[in-house]
Length: 493
Image (tube, rainbow, N blue to C red):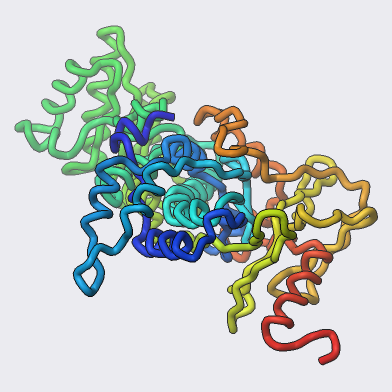
């Protein structure tokens, strides 16, 4: 919980888009500082054409919010900004208001590591509208990227089918924070370790690594390079064998494995980083086994992802550990999760909630109103459907009926007695943290536990089953009325 401070210093309040501050100023000028708002953070489509998404980044959100404030330096910078006429953009009294502002919102969120689906609120923010608005960009920044990477990691680890996956993506990641965040999210998604030493220190993630081709090239011969590495690191010997001739490299690794054994040590294994990984791993496995190194692992790298790993598995590749870098840390085939943050309810002090939606010509872009909660139903050990409902209104006494927001003909009835849990849990109340923040290892375990509860169909890589998620019928009817009213229709039209 000290990662942000250790990396970036005291204040991150200006980690936002400029229009958040201009809107905050306009709200202040309009006298809306006492208006209470509710916002929901959600996404509209699973990434990677996947059947699910892993919620990740909540710890970053919690740390950001517990430290939220505008420093003197932040205020001085904002005071230096001018409008088109050359006069100061913000009044001094507004800047004084910002400097005195403290985080006082209620936050409810899905626990980190939860499986989540389109339109379900991952985070719900309730509080003064100015403060809620200022939180939009940093919350999306924290959740979008890490959820994307955790989902990619989960898919890659499912393809590996129990084999360890190592995250090797720092050198290709999007800057320092991109690399650190990717390492954290990849570990939560299921990776066994990272090559990123700073992430290992900050998050208690196991670190792994061997040597590069440059090590081999720095010596006159490959066998000399292996020998010197074995002498230096006898308890960490995985030899990269493809600098020159891969199978000859395997022979040299075997030779050094025998030397290590004679000196009371053990060769961990070899790494393949190029060529026909299926063919070379099968040949290398046979050579290692014949030489008496049946427990030596074979690590493969070289631009792997879940689809390539699946293919190599189908070809019978004798690979024990998978090193995945670029296509994991950069979410190579989908660079962003389209998370959004929408106003869903608003009220003045002492008044009732006014429910809000964003209209669009595209049905999928019409937002959902209300103080949204997600109820997940299960039949025994298997999850069978999720209902998005409005906590501010009465919950059905009998059976639940959920309606797909994208297709009103797709509906599912769930008996009232069905076992269930409400997914959003209290994180902050009045700005005070009210939950225990789990460690990264517990979050990683939650991913495994959650995924185990879903039918294998939603975990397919090609044409996954669409898990039933819908608006509870009362909320669906409320949304329909608001849409019709906004478009000029009423019950008599």
